[in-house]
Length: 103
Image (cartoon, rainbow, N blue to C red):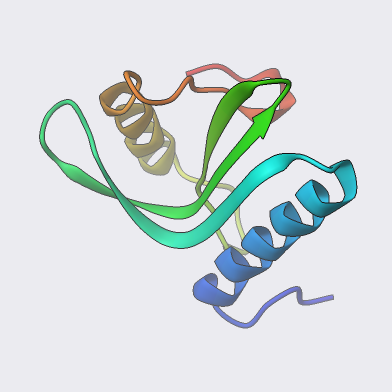
């Protein structure tokens, strides 16, 4: 089953999924945006596929979502790029990875 036709469609699907999760859980101050630019400590501006910001229990949470729409495993190059991105924006975001992986 093909979920989406293009990488952009896949990114927008991820955005929609997070919007729906937030609506169900009743989280405050929902902000889910596609194709966001965030400047890192280095001064480099990074493109983020989906940016998710919400407030829960009085704490603001910011989540960066990088979508990869491939028919194969993500390459080491992409993992290293994500690690570089999370390191560069670590003053603004706390990195976490699904499945227990760490940077």
